[in-house]
Length: 233
Image (tube, rainbow, N blue to C red):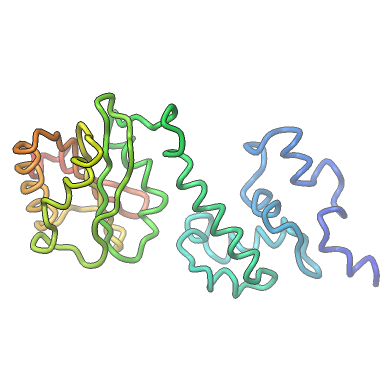
């Protein structure tokens, strides 16, 4: 009975299989997703150690992307989670999202549409509403910031072009890159997307701020309007 009660503990695993010890010895890149979650969870439940709980959570939500899309309440409702563990997982995901822009010396450089999409794909493909954001870039095409301007059902009439450029003017950005998501998962640009792009490019010429691209994020895919010559001449 005592052995069964204790079966949820990481300490019951052989030392070579314990996530913390493996991370210290081999580095975090050597651990799989369930093991990384186990370190955050710390303990499991009766009959499941923390690694097994992590595996179950990933299976329930369909992997890390599904876990990212899930609400705190949905994660908290899973057996063995609770408020503290759910908050820990969601906080870790948010920290990962912010890390790329934390250090000015290590700011990502956008040299292609794929570079830009990679910075937001993980997060924006999980959003259930449309969000429009603007990447601010300096003269070396380093990302200074990513600013959210709108969310909801976007169309050409509701996007005020002047607001798109306000963060760039305030931060003295050399150029911008516009990005928004399609919650349907299909990144095919709509006529409204093209109309917004044309208006933004025209305003950028007046303000002497380059508009490098407008990227639409879908489920694991993206479309560059510039590559497709939609709104860009």
